[in-house]
Length: 236
Image 1 (cartoon, rainbow, N blue to C red):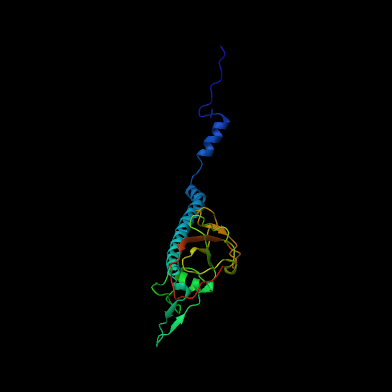
Image 2 (tube, helix red, strand yellow; image 1 turned 120 degrees about the vertical axis):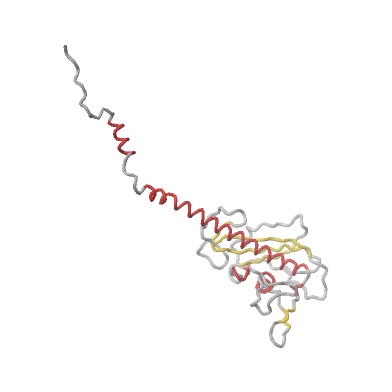
């Protein structure tokens, strides 16, 4: 009687593939958490930075909207065409602000601060904008008349990348429909177009360039009041 050889006690009868997989999966797992953290850290901190930047963009946009509302009211009532502001010097000195220049509109109507002399327009309070943002180099304003409100174009793409001198600046005749657009180039930390339609990125500001900026903006359309006894506005 012949019999088959019995397998040796303790011999490995698994297939080579199963043995390989078992050895691969049962290796020492010390350091696995470090590897997992390294893999997840980049997207985690990227999302954290994007969330923080989104909050900063929203804050800047809200401050810009608030500043434009005040400047729009001053334009609508005719204050900006012949504003006289009393300085805080002793004795007080009354100064007339020349609003035929867009830079003065930005400084005294759109971006007034308590440190400016004259500091504010009549009835206006200092804005938060100059305390957090660069009003002198990165803020633009475009003011132009319109025939009616229904036909008013409120797009912003036609003024992105232009210097202030290339924009329209038409102040303010009585009983005139005006479109006022304020645009600010907010330096970007993460230059991604993921922040919504009012914060697209660009490297062209009509001035400073070489980095990425979020383009935030605000628009208003008004009809000026029938004010009198003020100097005439800037013709377009």
